[in-house]
Length: 133
Image 1 (cartoon, one colour):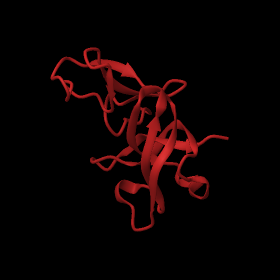
Image 2 (image 1 turned 90 degrees about the vertical axis):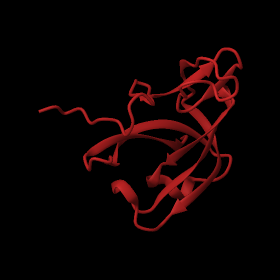
Image 3 (image 1 turned 180 degrees about the vertical axis):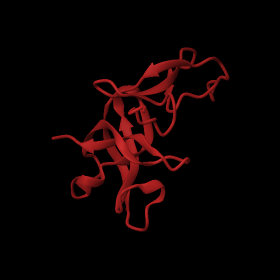
Image 4 (image 1 turned 60 degrees about the vertical axis):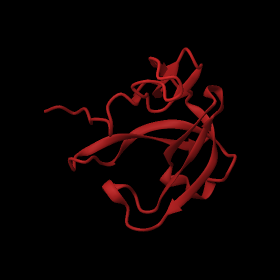
């Protein structure tokens, strides 16, 4: 039996340690993207694979208290995280065990764990950000 739990989507993070998000970088535009697009949305040029920062800050978020999809915890949070080192804002799950510590501007760090299930109903590994400290 294979004990490795598949990621929610292939190629978007590396388990590490430390875990890293995998995005794209357009050398022509000097812009980063997450997830990596096939071509640069700005210039239509080729995009290289790029490791993204594992630290950021919460730009905005919402706590969802209704029945969660895909076996996510109830309640869960989703929000925009600014990866300042990459000049990039991404959408992400936020740590459902630390909802009381979430606030705009709070520094966060990346974590990767088995959370919920994928489209096939099997457990999957997801990335999320958790408050530092």
